Image 1: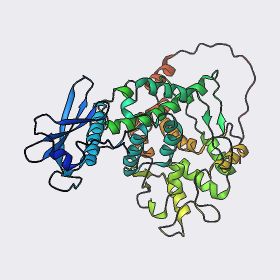
Image 2: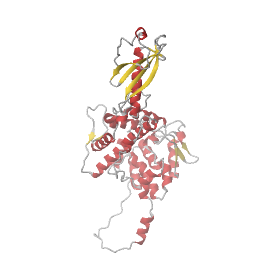
Image 3: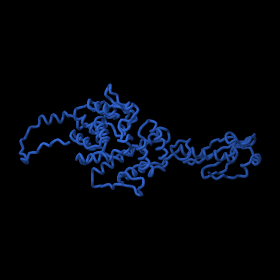
Image 4: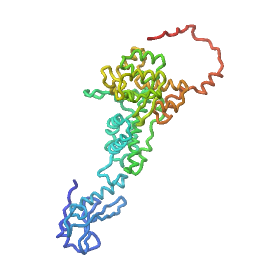
Length: 433
């Protein structure tokens, strides 16, 4: 709370009655650049305040009536102490306006405040909130959270962005662990540097989204400081891993029975692990051979089309179950939870001789890749996978689609008849159970 200033000539109504009526107020300094004043009229008086602006000129405002004839109510009629508080509130609002802050917000509006407000809006849209909030708490707030939005500069954001890209990647750490589990960045490994920068760009996107939301809500006057910060270039060029049809068969055969249903579901639908884990029997429609994903990563629902093989699979997976039951469960009937898929998938990859082992998300990529290699148009694949538009689909799968350029080159480039390096003939691999 601000220190209360005393003044024998202003703080009581009896003292103010002894003052002469004049046009200019009787001023009392509250702090450097801020004064409270009392303007004496023929019948009572009013409180005013003034502040010294950055141009060296005073800006004055009226506050309210003084308690010369009526008892103070703190709203319309103010005593000397209440007038001081009103003057300071006006002063703070003026400063916030100069710095581009919302004048109605008490205190400074920080990056953490902007992230908080953005996440409240983000949650309303139905998107996956938990993962985004974790990234904010761990990777943004510790460095930038306490910075007042009006004092956030391009350099501060750039320094944070580049520092994050050079820092060790955080790995899954047990809650009981005393030390954070991290993986140092190998600067000589170009792909590791690319991956780290790509991850950092995604964190920058979260920060910019929150700051843009604050700007649109009138919390800051300009978006220039973060608009000038550019993401790392040429880092979003991943080599998408996918399983061949033979690897898919080997992987499914190597899975435990309950997990086998999850793997089959992913390969036949392209759904995410979380989407499959929450599917209910009522979400499967045998009449038009589709399943509905009610809440996807984008916050929108979508219908996934099933092939004949997919239709037979879901018919078998849902038989004898009520509509409200979860389709895919553990052997004991419990739901598949977060990270429950990691170990059984790793063990299955090892048993199926798939190296390096794949993540569950690669099963989704396999579905999209196999569609692309069969010539399915990108908009159709985008709809099946739930992409907002074809940009993400083309980024991951366009190179696998039948290409006019590739077909033309293969058709017209002559066979040169170059000598073979070896006369060794490769045996055709046998079937694997």
